[in-house]
Image 1 (cartoon, rainbow, N blue to C red):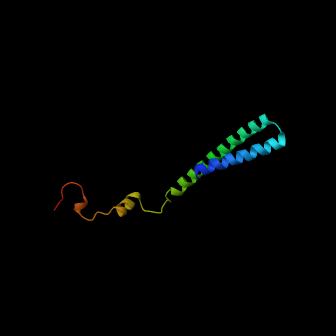
Image 2: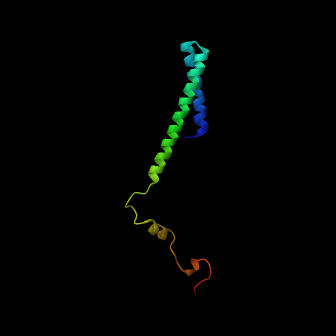
Image 3: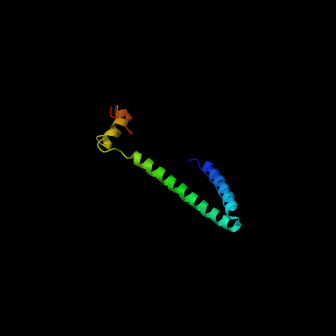
Length: 93
């Protein structure tokens, strides 16, 4: 969800909502209050959707139990030691 696009869409939806509410009720004050309530509900929905996306991404990143032997085995596979020259400090020749 790209934030500027969401805010522009939200403002457009609020304008359409305000025009429709004013056309139905004819009350400027009532339209203003209902539009403010609508804006708050839109923000709550946006926050809930963002929270859901973060939760789903965190759930998908959890390792599957039993998928790999251990975390240390994965580290050793990612960084194999080829020779003593890879170690910091003096060489053991």
